[in-house]
Image (cartoon, rainbow, N blue to C red; front, side):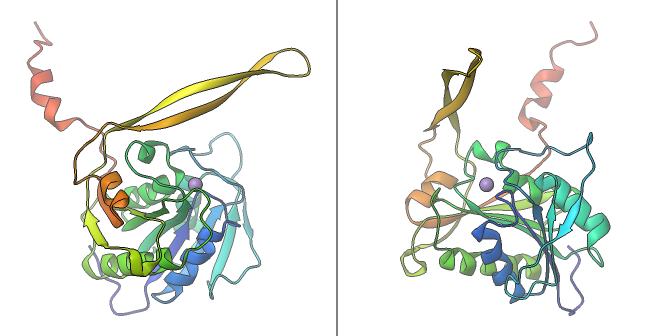
Length: 262
Ligand code: MN
């Protein structure tokens, strides 16, 4: 929970939709109002790669000639979102950033989607490296208008810079696809229980070998009113604190009663 000592904060912006996605330019523009912004994002879209890292290939970073509201430097990285954040924090930035913000993702990262999300993983990587982090998603797969999301991202980032987050905890923010005036407010939520009901469309390639396209339907299994999905559905911004310690703490004690050493 260190502060930035009154200096202009250093903010790293990343995403999983790629350095050319409109959402990252919108996010960088909003963050420039708060601090010095560096951008390091995948050269190509990396949605749903989760927390993958690149170990069998080199990771290259290419300077990108764009403005994004006055970002200091913009890099397109041949790698995953987690690679981008690792490389930026260890090599590309002049010092450790005060905040990492990932997004603005095109599409929701609520409920189970968190586990697949490259957007969230970029923020998670920052949390692992000890830097406060926020993932921001706009719940609209065809998102074009990022104006409201920019304001929300600004508000959340400003608050996190002011308050700081506990070690290992990051914020996952999901924004309803509404104009700012229609957004009802912000709710602190938990992840909804959900699943994907996958199916595979089998096709045949020109050499007569079968191949598959995965498709799926998202199923919300949670009637709770304090969930991320319920918040977005009711026109609120969902703010969920998450962490990467996957230990099932509630099951530690029952499991230890299994007489492991009998
Ligand atoms: Mn994405």
